[in-house]
Image 1 (tube, rainbow, N blue to C red):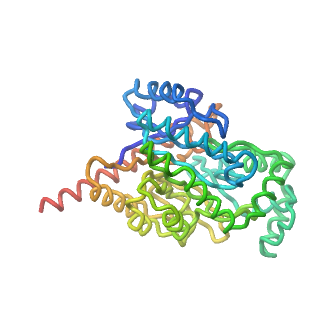
Image 2 (cartoon, rainbow, N blue to C red):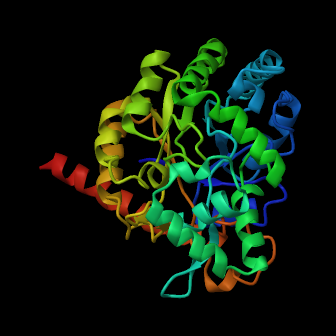
Length: 395
């Protein structure tokens, strides 16, 4: 079955490696978050972090992620040196025997939510992307040039009323949630700096930005192949344009284009169910079957979608996405590969439950109890489906 892994943010993470072992995970998904974006990860630091993980009986299963400097994404400034540094990091990871690297190519903002404590009927708290609030920020607080052109008159009217009703405290919190950086992201912006970054990226357009992604993959793939590293790109989150920015990893067609542009057994995908699944036109089960050989890593979470593009992160087995069907398709892919090629999965973005809601330092989406609950639910699904497969085969 799929390897059960856990996202860990290193020694400063309030969730300890001992707690992760007790949750039942056998693999760690982490990064050297202390290394500035664009710098090479030293082999000694990689080995030290790996030894810390292995001392608790787990392995460093996936790197998530080696972040990309904006120079690489724009192919401006010192991008060639940044690519060299990235390649050396891959080689160092390969030397340590770590063979899977998840990365993303989202411009300016990484995964984005407007509300980090959306209260559910049972009083648990979830992550939410609220389109009205986002438009209110983009048009009326950030005051992005030509932002109004990206939205319907009806949505603008609703957003304007929403903005007018917000207190200054609410506006400041909304801005912090959107641009100040979330766990595992690539840093924070100020209002002025994000305007400048948006301008640089929108100038490329969607196809120009897509070609920059393909060029980056062509630059690094020889090093990935030499190091034995499987590269698996994470989809846009959410999988549609924000701030008028180009998005190039949002649909099945985008994923196919990435695989076609740089044919290599090391060029693959992270199937993030919550990210791809925030679009109703992405059929996750079909994608798992279509791209199975190129899926190297899986994020399992669920969402409930709304007509205007808003969504919140639901219980893992109670959203709009067919989690049972998706896990079944992934287990079928594992069976095709054989026992030596399991797919690493991790429970993504658990709810913030009562026992942790007043604790300081809890990373949004990465509380302990919420993810432990999610992992237990997903583990149960995997065991039942695996048992059914073997029982059926025995007949």
